[in-house]
Length: 303
Length: 146
Image (tube, rainbow over all chains, first blue to last red; front, side, top):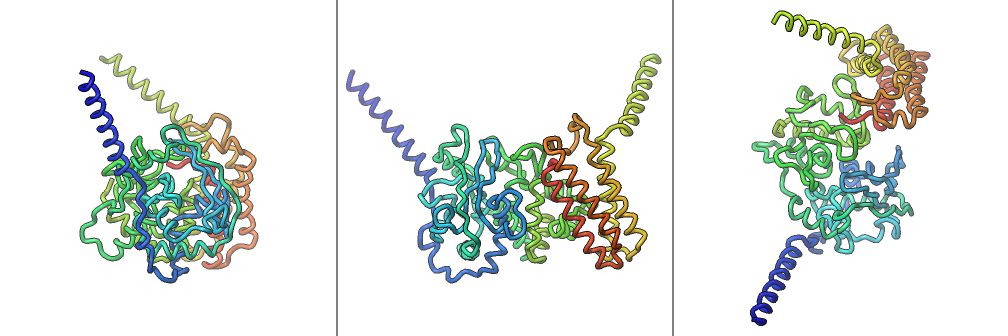
């Protein structure tokens, strides 16, 4: 009898261990191998600067209220409220202690495209690596090269203030298992080069969907609602949809380009909230890229 | 049946009158009207900037005057408790002085430009930039996303 019980107990332990091993296998941090980041050559700094603006780095990592050249000081320190708690945005300036001055390209690249920090830890998806995952090794190399030319800051941001269970980094592995993907957000049949360029900019570095797509209770994008808009995750108000079925349905591609260039809607209302900074970033892009974004926004399914 | 119809008609009439009265006294309606007028003025300047309309000194002057007049009166349309059902962010009442300063800054910019009237399309384009920078700066903090 005792032996039967011990067998059952042993089987139970084995099942739990197997479950834990499976869970670990499915949710462990998965950086790209070192070889992925080798042989990228010298960075193209001009392209790196374009990616810096397309990626909106300054919108979070520059100090609150920064303008002009101060937007290039990646001191961190802004607070980003969310339904899961408050994130304090880190310093990513080239300072070797407070910033990322000692990081290798592989460390930077794995943070950007795999959500894995330099100690092999999961990063919180408030940092939009779920979008940046679409950037190539060469893109990352160019951006990293450019960011090394920016001023260093010794500012140290406070730790994140998150409630249980979001304060457990391992839990991010579960989120990644459910929601992390570098596949296209929408399949666009017969997309030409311009639309494909727009798709890369919007779904990748531009990370537009991070705000413009509604999320479920676990912070994953709701399926079939790409760019449909929804409640503002940072607080009051709502984020407008930007598909051909939403409030900008009547805008022409030229209207969208003009909005991203000047901040004015076709009836001369202006950008508001965090879109003000996004628009200022986008205004740094070549006009052909803004036209590509407009073409893509006209090609996505209406919501 | 007849009594019910009369009651419904009376109720509808009262509601209609109430709505009309609200539009006049309602600070939300009033300030939204002002913003629309500023937007229309920017539109008039924008049309000249983009070359959709020819340069017209009278149009430019009217637009700049409207912006200046509206923005001077604009911050007075935010009495305590007028936050509901509007795009006004709570930050307005937390930083009323800054909110007023930002509103008057745009009025001041419009006055400065009026004083040295833009003489051609390029001048209007330059004025648009100066004025336009105010829109985002204020909306970033004080208007809710919607």
